[in-house]
Structures are given as structure tokens and as C-alpha cells.
Image 1 (cartoon, helix red, strand yellow):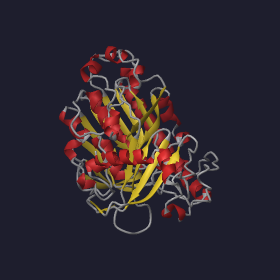
Image 2 (cartoon, helix red, strand yellow):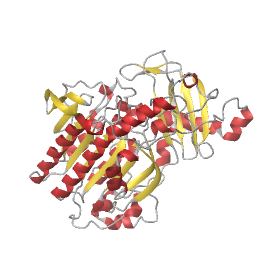
Image 3 (cartoon, helix red, strand yellow):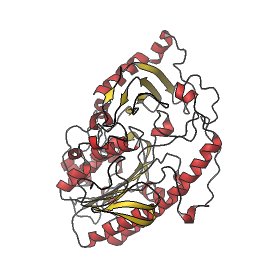
Image 4 (tube, one colour):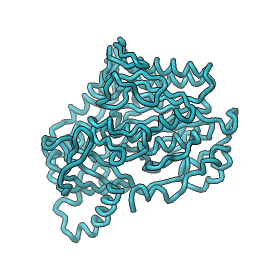
Length: 472
């Protein structure tokens, strides 16, 4: 059974019934998922299409809530917190392409940061929304390797950032220019100006808001440069001394707790300005009277390891690299109660969720599912491709992730600048972790395992399922 097949065993709320009102959602209250959180539309006219605010931060791992308390209070305390949020490919451009398309990277083709041009722009959520009459805006980072002079397709307004924190270059509605100032604040101001137009433009809108924080070099705004952050003594995976059961690149990793503390401090300080921006956006929605019928999704494009197993980056199959904060709020549909959702969700689910909310038919080829219904999955395919042959770092890998276990294979494969794959495909290393007994992934149960032990762990079946996911 493929990963996509496993997501479709429980059908989402029917689109027509969902848009007709809360009654259709309430009828599904016995099913898992957001259908349980149904409520009345309040003052919002029945069938009114929601505005959509999608906020995607950069390299923000879980366990960073200290830096975004106002965001958590709004979207967690008055929305839905997903406890198992993931990036299906823990790398910027592939992840963002999955956000736009609802597809895994092996389907949309952006397998590395150089391959942004491989994304079929006709598959993107912004294209579908613009065609359906939405006013579309992009504010901040777009796709790695995208030429700044090229306008982002299917956005009516934009301020596209060449990544940086201070005095950066931007493409603002087709004009490339330098704008002095801290870029997170500029993202905030451009977004607020876009929202102001809603006072006179009656169309529903889609705002894709994507600050550079907390990506390296994680430069905080001057006001937060010296802000104390909570002490952190690391996770058990940080001081792991015996890594003989790990792949060679992890055995050679050298990052320390002190290295991690330094990066963590800069990340948290840079995210404080993101929190300010989110609060300003919320206040603007309140002033415009549009908070009630705005679907808001907040997530990170991928996670980041803080010296876990000696690795201080992303791009690895360990949980901190692909687990991300994930919040949703939509008061007009009853999703404002401060609930917790334990389903396995991912960036591939964002586009289907937005299109479901907007009443736009689901296009062919999407791998994710709408989070507004009861659809659930028992596992997630997470994968990453090496760009170029040779060199240090991880090899191409794919992973079968559930709440209780994770099975990973590394392959003799690499990609070129277009995302095309070459290599033998031979499996060069494998890992299996019991995430219940070993949540920090300290003991690879396949290290020196006998064939009998592998069968007892169910490895042949997991390998077959992973193979089906990768080709499905």
C-alpha cells in the first residue's frame, strides 16, 4: 500500500456540504480530524469564500515556541495545534514546492535547491486561487535559485526577497530595488499594505508570507540582539558519543552542544520579529473585520538539528530535521477553540486544505489531503536527494515515518541542477528506530541485526512499503 493510498481510507468532508455550512461538518463529528471542531459561521455569510493567510518560516524547528508566544496564543490557543507536523523533504526549495503543489518532491521534480525551475507552475495553489478570482500576494522568500528579476507566476502583487536580513534586494511588483531595513519588518509592512487594499477590493485574498527567519546566519533585529533566551542543556541525542550504528557522515559529524546553543540563540532571537509581524497581521485582520473568515496556516519549511548526533543542519532523516511547528485557525468554520490534532500532517497537505476551503475542485496529482476533513494517514514518506556526485554529507535517502517507528534507506543516487536523478539506486545503509522506546533515535536496531531479527522487526514489509511510496 502506498503512502498516498493510506491517506485516502477516510474520505474528507464533501466539498459542497462543507461550503454549505457547519452542519455538514457536524455530521462528521464521530470521525477523527478537524471535523470535530465544527461551529457556526457567526456573522460570515453562508458560503462566503475565506481569505487565506499562509505563513512559512525558514528553517524553524519545533521547540521554538518561546520565541513566538503571540503566534502560539493566536493560532494554537484560538485554533488548532498539530502535534505531528512534518516537512516531506527537509530542504527549502523542495519543501516550498510541496507547499505550493501538494505533491511529493519526486512528483513535482524540485529535488534540490537548484531545481526551482522544474516546478510546473500550473499545479500551484496560487494559480488555482488566482484563476478562481482570488487576489494573490507573496511577501518574502520565494524559491531558492529563482532569479530575482523574474516575477513569481500567478501572484498579482509581490515583494520577493533575495534572502538576507538587512538592506536586501527585492523584486517589488516587477521592479528590482534595494530596500534598507530589517527584512522581517519589511515583509510585515508589505503584507499589511496588501491587506489594507481589502477595504476597497471585495475579492477574497491569498497572502503567502515568508520571512527569512530563522535561516542562517539568523541575524536578529537590533531590538532583540541581546535578548536573553531560555537555557538549554541539549537533548540526549546531542552528546551521543557512540555513533557506530549511524551512517558514515554522522560518525564524522563534529557539532557540539556549545555550537548548538549558539545557533539556537540566534534562531530564537530572529523569530521574535516574526512573532511581532504575526501579531501586527492579526491586529490588521481585526481592524478590517476579516479575522473571522480568514483561514490561517503557520508552519516551517523544514526543521533543524541542534547538534543531534553531531549534526548542526537539516537534510537528514532524524526527527528534528523534518518535524516542524504546524498551526491552523479558521474561526468561521469553528476552528478557533484551541484544540490539538494528533494526525500525521505535512506540507503536502497545505495546498489541498486551501483549495478545499476555497471550494476549488481538487486537481489531479496531489499527494496530500485536506486537513479540514477526517482524512488520516498511518505513515508519511519523507525523502531527500543529494545534489551532485561525491562530496561530504548524507547520501540520498527515503524514510517511512509513523508515530511509533521510522525506517530509512540511503541510496547510491544523486541529482543534477534540474533535479534529474542518476545512480545505481543501490541501498548503502539502513536505519530503524523504535520512536516510543527511543524517541531521540540513539539506537539503530538494524546495526549488526541478523536476518531473523530483521524479520522480527518487520523490515522486509517496511522496505516493500517504502519502495511503493517512492514509486507511487
